[in-house]
Image (cartoon, rainbow, N blue to C red; front, top):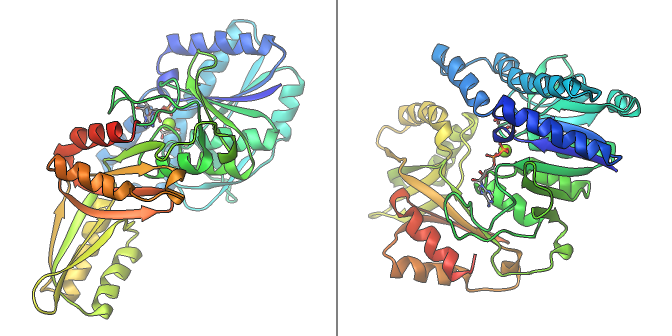
Length: 400
Ligand code: ADP
Ligand code: ASP
Ligand code: MG
């Protein structure tokens, strides 16, 4: 069997852990498998590297940031390969570029365009374990690129698709839970989850899988196993919806803390003016998420929207431009909010989920600001201080 295994940052967070993983991989190899391993940077290395760059400037050149961040994964591939070789196991480490991972798009959020797999295939043929740096590739200019935070998941699924292999993602939890187990201790582990639901959960804040990795899994029909490092079985399979045995109305709840609410007060109800405001936000790369509007007095309206808290610097730039054109608009920001979402394909054919959540909020005195819905999810922004109350009550009500 041909297997692509991915080990995340916590799983390779120390030399001891790297040695243990080396033992585990050798065992898998001895069971007559061909193994490609994708690894992340050790522990919080990527955060540390970003912090270093930001000590110089808040806005580092993105090509150089990619150059810097890619070094994290490069350390892990070398260390793991040294460990394997030391134990007598033939293995070779490859950077994204050496592994033939070609990307397109802008630095720090590039996309995999194709994988030239010849070199990996040749090393597998030689009987070697191939250790590939996750999260990185090379673009058409020959520059090192990265795939966005959490991108090693995407490297692994893309390699599994290219190499016609099964895909196993090893992390610090023993599978995908209905709710982030760090946030809700009684969350239930799922045996299976559909690609659609996992994509929605990831998109709405469940950091356990990178959304593009799941998208690729769906596109190439690669079942993705998510489990705890060094444990076999008992994890979660991400598969086609038809293969999920237990169909529930709501499968999971996601929490997104990376949210900032912006209130625009006292706007004249003029579509052109409103269009102008949102075009400035767009031109400044502010990712506007949820939008709500209410009448204030006469022909004045208030508009609120949310965007990622991590884009506050881009937002501030846009606000300066908006105020230059419309000095009378009052703009305020609120950062002590979070977005809570419930996800489930059952919502396509069943109604009443929103009503039930409104009831829960009423009973528990939780106010909400914005609501958005998709075919398979409903999201609410609420005050951060109500997080655990909201999560626990919604989870209980939907048996999550
Ligand atoms: P890795 O470094 O292995 O990629 P991540 O930190 O990216 O690991 O993802 C694992 C973390 O995702 C877990 O520690 C867990 O707290 C969090 N998480 C968020 N939502 C979920 C969920 N629904 N099920 C399991 N884990 C989740
Ligand atoms: N090391 C990168 C990050 O921390 C990629 C990954 O872990 O998947 O985002
Ligand atoms: Mg991750």
